[in-house]
Image (tube, rainbow, N blue to C red; front, side):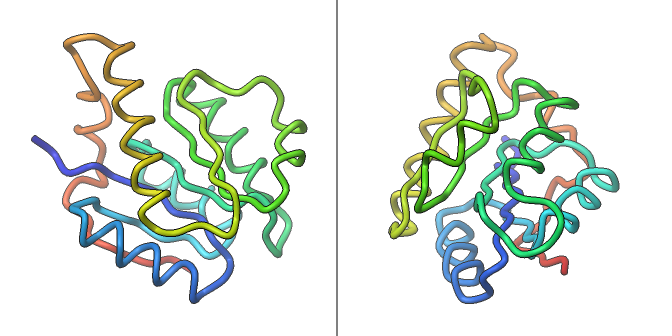
Amino acid sequence: MAQTQVLFVEDEDLIRVIVTESLAEAGLAVTEACSGEAAVELLRERGCFDVLLTDVHMRGRLSGVDVARHVRSLWPEMPIVFVTGRPDALHEFGVPGPHDHCVLKPYRPAEVLATIEASLVQATEQEGPRGRADHAASPVANTQATSTG
């Protein structure tokens, strides 16, 4: 079975490092982006991930909501996990997808891991026996805790 591919978008270096290490220790392959712009570039270069984990409010031109809109336009079934201290900001995203979740700040990395796992289980159950095979064939396979930005 292919390792779960996570794109983690977070502009705060310390948070990004701690969460990435925790997710990698749990067996997930994490690719980091330090901005919305870097995330969109990674998505253009590498294609789909199994799940998007994104902060909502970040420095730069693109917010986490902008990144999520980009993902939704290309891969409508990709689970999205938002992290934010202001969940009301997600209203601008519109109607959440069936696999979208929100983790409130402050959070523990274990909460993020549990939410990612729950979103992937929901996605797999709704897709049926085929599972996430379309994502497993992604060119990001076997990437372990890489960083862009």
